[in-house]
Length: 239
Image 1 (spheres, rainbow, N blue to C red):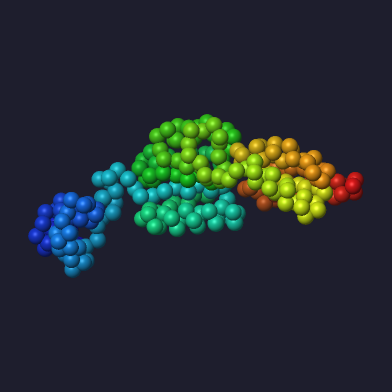
Image 2 (cartoon, rainbow, N blue to C red):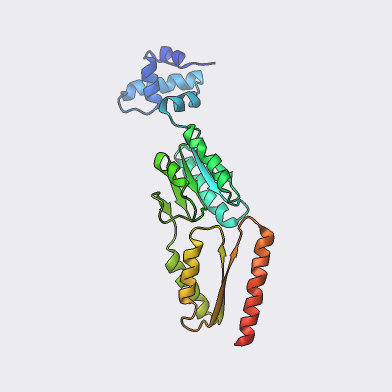
């Protein structure tokens, strides 16, 4: 196996200079860096990434926690996370939590053992006080769903404006009855439901309803939709 010492010997420099060159340090003169890279290529040297990460106290791994891989909404976002991580030379460990807090805690503990440098959470609950402990000591970003009171960066849409836009769009299409499904586990679902309630009797929309569903349970989702359809049919009969 080719070692960094052999590369240094072939290039006529110190091991430290080889290390600085491989880390793209500006302290290495261009001519010296070129000799080192030529030696690396000639010998076929491959740096030990695990050793480098250990010295830097980092893993170059990011956790992406999603409640349900089968949901196309999450799969598109996970694809974007993976593409950007690749550009930044990071790896992404995608974790299917099924919305269980215990699973989320287990994966997040990987940051404490330096198996991951940070985490992106794609789903969350209102009761997320336990997450504050991780957010204080680790790099965590809430994506899509978020807990408003948690001191943690988040990336999401304007839920109030989006709900208003949704209702306005259906009204422009001539809808008299509007139903809305909200993920029961989502922390932001309650806010969306309240906004929907405020808009319920605005304009020409006379009757509406909202139903919670469990993103983990397909049978539950079917039942929720059946209840909504039944409510919609009843409402239409009243018009």
